Structures are given as C-alpha cells and as structure tokens.
Length: 143
Image (cartoon, rainbow, N blue to C red; front, side, top):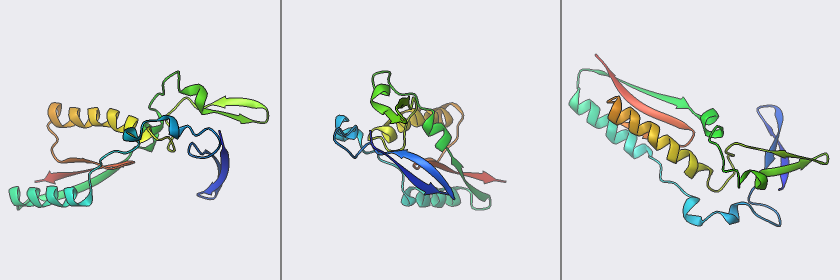
C-alpha cells in the first residue's frame, strides 16, 4: 500500500494513501459506503432559532467536542487488517484501527456515533445534538 511523508503541525507524519497505486483499497469498498450525510450549518441555525423562540430569556450555549481519537479507535474487520499492511524497512506493519483515508472509514465511525447520539437523545434527554465530521456540536440552555 502506498505511503508518503507529510508535514503536519511542524512534524513529519507517515500517511497511507488508500486511493493510490496498483491495487486500490478504496476500490474494494462499495461506492454507497463512501459517503455519509452530515448536519450542516443550516441545521445548527434552525436549532438555535428554535431554542431562542422556546426559551427567549435563557442564555444559549454552543459547544464542540473533538472526537478524532474516538474515530481511530473504531476496530476494523480481521479480514480488512491484512489489506492495511504497510512495508517499512522490509517489515510489515498492520494498522488495526480505522484510518482517515479509508473509503468506508466515515461510514463506520458514523454508524457507531449515531448510536452514541441516540443514547444521548432518547436515554439522557439531550435535544438538538448535531453531527459533524470530527466534531460534535450541541446547544444547551443556561437559566
């Protein structure tokens, strides 16, 4: 699998390109698994307007949460792991976790994350949770 070195935040990082080379890993994933529907800024605006209309005298708090660590912790199928092997200095290394460049990576993460959002809404009573890639945004009310 092709890998490259890129500079990010002043450090060199090794990346794996699953959409490049002779045998593309991403070509083995059905196209309908390559895309996901996420909330947009319009959904956030509508949720904020609805909260303001319902609670005109309360302070509205918007927050975001970075979940990139959770993204990488999504386990991969044992059948997929060998396909993620990278040869470095004559030795093979296997990335056992979800990668950012995989065609189905976002779909896998969102499947898990929708369960988390469902629990937050229906078991904890938290309304107006919105899902964005890499971050979560929600609005809450302060009396």
